[in-house]
Amino acid sequence: MQFSNVYEDKFRADSYAQLEFPGTYHLAYRDLPEIISEFVAKGKAIDFGCGTGRSTRFLKKLGFDTLGVDISAGMIKKAEELDPDGTYILNDNNQLSEMAESQFDLILSVFTFDNIPDKEERIKLFSELGKRLNKNGVMVLLDSTPELYVNDWASFTTTIFEENKKAGSGDIVKVLMLDVEDKRPVDDVIWFDKDYREQFLKANLNLIKTYKPLGSEEDGINWVNEDMIAPWIIYVLKRA
Image (cartoon, helix red, strand yellow):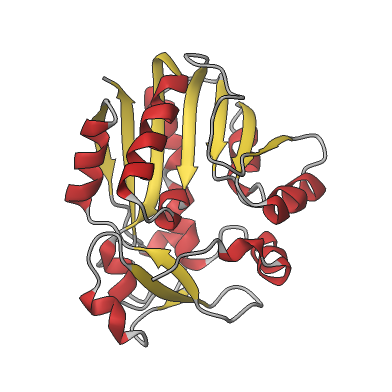
């Protein structure tokens, strides 16, 4: 199956740009300030796969000098419109040569690797990103759990796609987003935890800690499954 970057579509980019932290997305970002502060103070950061700049703006509010990087020209354009003072780079060939090695305190990647189907490409990117970290720097990787694609959520419907239930690592799965105007299904790539860990090892990254946030009553959101099943997984990594 062919996998393409759906966010090159202008309507998709415009719809996604309006999304902040509703519903299930609240869980993705809720714990990040505490997690990040546990491992790294303020400094230089890369938001890898920044999209329309949601995570870049998030890091800037935390006090980081942040560079947003994405392969989608449409997303970068929208990010620059929303954040005229921000710094964004179009990285259309997935090469990181414009970013100096050993210079960054933090690399954040939110949902980016849900859109990279090739195992070797993933290992190469993990390795190249790791080289951009300084000796005390950390990479915080936030992606979907496999459970996301076989359950329903406050912000997504996935159970209507029967093919998701048979998917293995590297396969395309479908998600219907409920919080955006564009109601066309989104293609993601499912990866299981054991494959992430294998790729980290091959990329010379040490896994320091893993988090799987769950919803609670204090969040004030009508959870569907989020209070019982984690839709997201957060990996904290360092250079080996």
